[in-house]
Image (tube, rainbow over all chains, first blue to last red; front, side, top):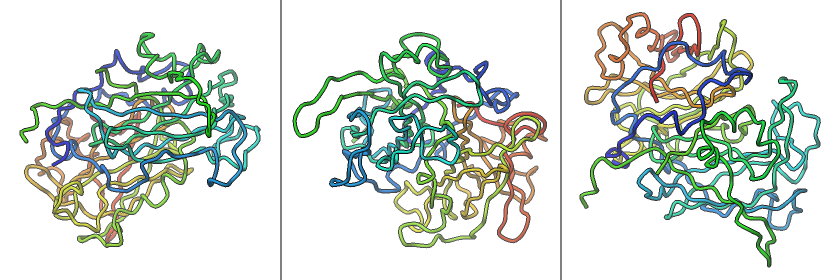
Length: 236
Length: 178
C-alpha cells in the first residue's frame, strides 16, 4: 500500500516554529496542557488520501478568472517549487492548496474585517496536484500586508498560505511562506517563532528573477520537504 | 533533508476548500456501504469557549476496515474529509461507522488546524459500545482511564454520534505526539 513502508519521526522542535508563542492571540487558550501522548504508527496513520480527488496539474493562474478575463491589480508573480520527502524523493500527485490576500491586503473571507478594498478580479485561492517530479507552479499577484486588528499593533508581512496533502496522514502539511526583504518580516510573530535563521529561510521564498516575453512576472520559488523516510529500500 | 517548518492555518482558509468535503458517504458518483452516520461535536478551548472557524480533517477506513488508498476499498466512500466549525464551535461530518481490522478497533483519525496553533493537533476517535473492554495499540497509549473514555464517540440517536474536542483545560482531549 502506498506510504505504508515509510517511517515518520516526530517533528524536531529545533527545525519548527515554537508551539506556544507569547503575545500571539489564542496561542495560550488552545495549546493543550497535558503532554502529547506518544503512540505507535499503524497502517491507519501511515496511509492517506493521496489522489483521492483529482485536480489539474497546473500551472494555475490565480491572477484572473479566465484566460480572457482582466488581471487582478498588483504585481504579477510566478510561484513554483518541488515537494519531496526527507530522502529527496519527489512526491507526485500531492494536492497543493494556496490562499492569500489581494494586493491591498484583503482576503475573500467572512472572518476578514480589514477595511481594504476587495479586488473583483481576484479570489486569492488555487488548488492543483504536483506532477511526476513533485513540482507545482502558480501565477498570482503579490499579496499586500495587513493588520491583525485584535492585536492592536501586529501587521502581517506579505505571505502565501500553503496546505499540502502528501502521501499519508503523517505528512499532512500546512504553512505560510514569506517574501524576501520585507521590513515587516523582522517583527512578525510567526516568522520569528523559529529558533534560528536557517529555519527562518525555509519559510521565505527565493527570488528567481524576472521573466520577459508573453508573461512578464517576478519569479519566486519555495521547495518543501515533507516528513517521511524509507525504512527499507523498495524491493521492486 | 530537513523537514519544512509548519505554520498556523490562520483565520482565512477558503470556504471553497471545505465545501462538499464534509460528506464522506458519497464519492465519485457512488454511495458508501455500511451504516451511514453523522459525527458531530464541538471544539472548545480554555474555559469551555467555542473554537470557531477551525478546520477539522478526518481519515478513516471504510465499513469493512479498508482504507481508500487500498485497491479493494469501497469505491463509494471517500475515507478523507474536512469540516469547519461554526460560531458555536460545532463541526458536522457525514461518514460511516469504520470497520475494525487487524489489531485496530473501529476508529477515525482527526486533526485540528486553527489560528493560534502553529502545528496541527492530532487525535483518534473510537467507536465501541463498551469503551472499557476495548484493546487497541493507539488507545492503550493513553494510561488514564478517564482520558481514555474521552476518546470515544457517544452514540446519541440512531445514526448520530457525538465527539467533542477540548483543546485545553478541564476534561481536555488527549492528543498524540506528532
